[in-house]
Amino acid sequence: MTPVVPFVLASVLLVGAVAVADPFIPGDLVIYRVGDGQEALANTGGAVFVDEYTPSGTLVQSIALPTVVSGNNQPLIASETAVSEGLLNRSTDGRYILLTGYATTLPAGSSLSSSASADVPRTVGRVAYDGSVDTSTALTDFSDGNNPRSAASTDGINFWVGGADGGVRYTTLGSATSFQLSTDSKNIRAVEIFDGQLFMSSQKASIRVATVGTGLPTTAGQTITNLPGFPVTGNPNAFFFADLDDATPGVDTLYVADDTTGGGQIQKYALVGGSWVATGVVAADTVHGLTGVVTGRVVTLYTTTSGIDGTAGTLSSFVDNGGYDANISGQVVTVATALSNQTFRGVALAPEGPPAQTPTATATTPAVIAPTPTPTPTRTRAATSTPNLTPVPCVGDCDHNGKITVDELVTGVDIALSTAMLDQCPEFDCNHTQQVTVDCLVKAVNGALDGCTAQ
Image (cartoon, rainbow, N blue to C red):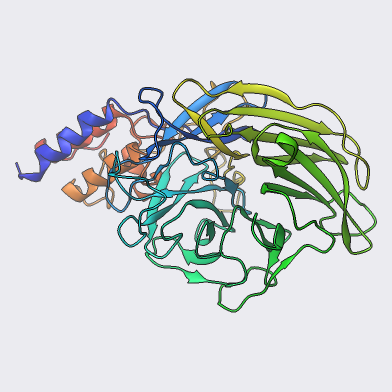
């Protein structure tokens, strides 16, 4: 037995205490949560979780972000008292959730936000529709000596990030450095992408909600321009654009989470004659995160609060029936509240997988075709994908060579811990459930020790 195999076996046993993530359910919400509920919240950091909720406020599952190095994945922890951190975005292709944090273990020796990014890199995390986690992007030049706050992406590969220092920056998955796009505004709250344009929010100088260059820039020298007509006061965090005017294509309605004006507001604006005009506010104390769903001309908004000191939190919903260039009205309804020693930050729509591929018959295709499993589940969690009944090699034999190596066993453990995707080695899915269980890992270890035999 090779010396490394006992270590892998120990890792397998460790997985028994770790919940393997389920795929997200389309239509659900995802919240950035800090704190495990056990220790009092502190600025020296806490564990980060991605919590999935139904729109009515029922907790579906919690996915823990790494707190130690695991393979290529770096830790992603957060300050438990910094209300500005933890904004969430869904990639524009719908497949990933993007978030930021700090690449260090718990507890930090001092305040996380004041640490140098060269010593404590800022992590960009990516959580896929199947629940797998990638935190391999740890930047040594992002938000140096201050808070990392948000990340946006088109495809889970290209990232735009913003924090309290260094301005809006561009990087790619797995990188250690980034490119500063502009020096116009260095203190950033949210970075978001709508209608093929990169936007950002700030609470400094004459910038509040603004465009960053044109389109999706990746080079330095970009100009940051406050939206025409948008006020240069206030405290915007997350924001949400919608297209509610049928006459002209493109976004024309804007909702903004302002966390201090009037104690906290959801603000609505309409693009009229090329200028953004205020169309009312709704009270929402200390609102921080914001996302929405558009159905016709009705917009359903979901918000999160973090409390004035960042140590509390709620998930709420709000429906605006007014449509384009009409006053916002209604009441924010709280549907979930953070537990003791936990805090909510940002909110986003749950990621969704690619549509199922429907097999088509050809002249040489047998009459009976096994259905392709759908990568995203239906609304009912109990519903499962159709099993793939095609025989596979022995469990864990990723390259089908009749042997199971230590590297393959490590891959299986990473998949079970959601730090690698199942498509890296589907042969670990011994029960055809689209996940790797402890039972499957034990079978793979036995195959490595006693010889590989087909299932």
